[in-house]
Length: 119
Length: 119
Image 1 (cartoon, one colour):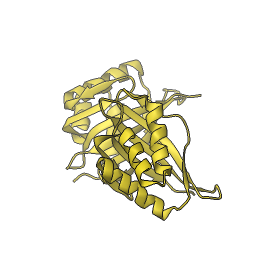
Image 2 (cartoon, each protein chain N blue to C red):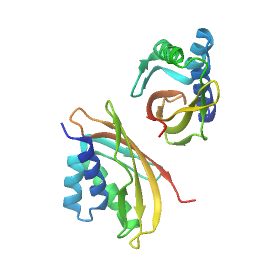
Image 3 (cartoon, one colour):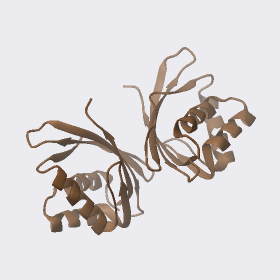
C-alpha cells in the first residue's frame, strides 16, 4: 500500500521528468497498469500511454515546471489536488485541479484533470 | 441526452427537497439507475439509496439550503461543481466540491463529494 502523499509527489515528478526512461519509471510507480488519464486537452491509457502523453505535453511547454499547490485531499479511494504550471521565468501559466480514484494498492487508477486558465 | 446544467440544477434541487416522493423523482431524473454517491461522511447507491441518503442528511440540517456556487465545469463525460450549505438564517455552514462521471444518457453515474469546512 502506497502513501497517497508520496504517490502525488511522484505524479508531479513524472510531469517534470524530461528523460523518457525515468519518466516511465515514475509513471509505473504512480499509476496502476490499467490506469487512464483524461483532461480537456489530452488523454492517455496504461503506463506507456500515460508516459508518452506527458512527454508530448512537455514538448509544448519546454522547461516549464509543475508544482503541487497544496497537500492532496483524500477520502476512501478518492483524491483531489491542485497544481500550477510555471514558465522557466516562474510566471504562472495555468492552474489544474485533478481528481483521481485509487487502485487497491494505492496507485492512481483513473485521473481526471480540469484546467483553470489565468484570468 | 440531458443537458449538464439542468442535471446539476436538479441535483441541487434534490438535496433541497423535503418531500420523499418529489425528492426521489428528482434523484431518478438526475442519476442513472446504477449510480453511486460517496463523500467523507455518507454514501448511497441506486435511486432509492441515494434518495434515502439525502433524506438522512436533511434530518441533520433541518431547513438548511444547498446552493450552487458557480456553473458546472464539464469536459468529455466528467463534471465538477461547487455548492454551499447555508443555515435557515443564511449563514455559511460548509462548501462542497463535487466531481462526477456521466452515464451515456447524460445523467450522473458516479458522484464523489469533498468538503471544505469554514476556516
